[in-house]
Length: 215
Length: 215
DNA sequence: TATAACGTGAACACCACTGTTCGACTTAGC
DNA sequence: GCTAAGTCGAACAGTGGTGTTCACGTTATA
Image (cartoon, rainbow over all chains, first blue to last red; front, side, top):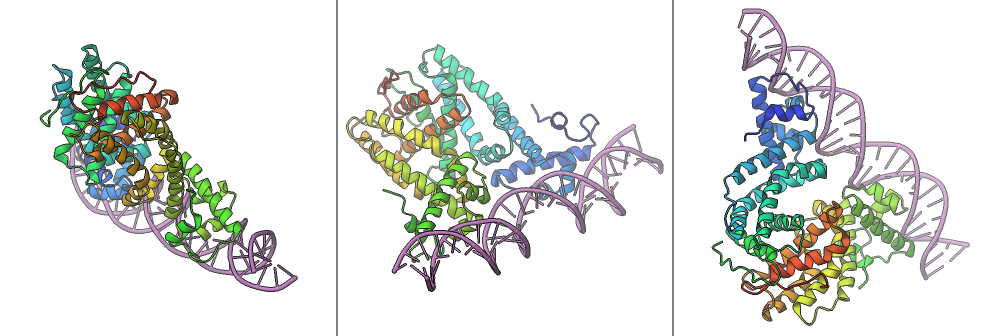
């Protein structure tokens, strides 16, 4: 599903929430959100002037569409999450839970890697509740997968689902950090994450699955 | 080992690097570093005015001892790490690697939890290299333990030591976040972390150890 | 083509923090 | 008790971002 520009601006209380926007206005908003994602991805402290410049738009124009810095960050984050959801929609989570989780990681860690710096910006500007709300989509996906894996005896049941999901995200994020620091290469990341998480999810008393680099 | 005030100020290029400091000056510095740790722990964006006020000291006095905000943050972080090292010194890392790791987690996750916000402040103000340098002490401890565990066949060897250490820290940090968000209680944290990490460290093909809440 | 919406740069006020200087006062240490 | 070191508040200048207004030029759309 595409990012709904009008719907977004309406729900955030920007000017002209109901009035139909002109085509060039929509183009400007699109450019700003895209530039914000890029700039904040590079530097979480990027100023609105910088974002406007990157969008090829005047600073005043930015303020005409977004009431505050928080709104810009929110829009950029929403966009990134929506894009991520589109990608995750293409991942087959049926069948063997272990293989499904491996497929999810293969697709998901890259998204986490790309949105890492953007998330830092969001954490500074947005409330924890809002960030959690934005992640509801991806979170529900993993929760359902983990729940199914537990029901089928593939994943451990001695720890809460929320904790397992949390561990998955923590490991993916830390892998992104390691890559940024040059201590891990991108091509090995998915294997390492998968091997680690599958082991962490294994029920006590059960042998850890052999991933052998091939998923 | 106690935090060496003179040594620290010397190596950071503050004024009077060689001259002996008066007792009241040392007291001021101590109060500032302590207040910085508290304030930055509460709010990573705490201003120097706020820190000086909390230390019961004039803002000018703070600048008399620390040339910049970065120096204050560095001092607070160094202090926290030193304190942590003192605690970790009391942990017995000999014997069964699994039990040793459990003991390390029991002592270490609490330190991570307390220094969480302080670390955020450090990440904004200090270079990644400096932060890594500060963590060299604790990191070496875990690396040695993991290396021994691998040699004894208790931990997996199909993933790099650095990655395993990284996973341990990532899980501890995420547990701290969960507690702060109210989704995990402090009394369960150590069990969850231990169960997760021991499983993640288990060699492929080997059964995951049963922790059973008792370590 | 009329007009309302949009885009624009320049300028403004505002704010919070940083880092420095000054002169006067207090205190530690020999 | 003398002196140098330390402390203090007030006030300063500088910085960089935020959010707003204005007057004017441009463009989409009916």
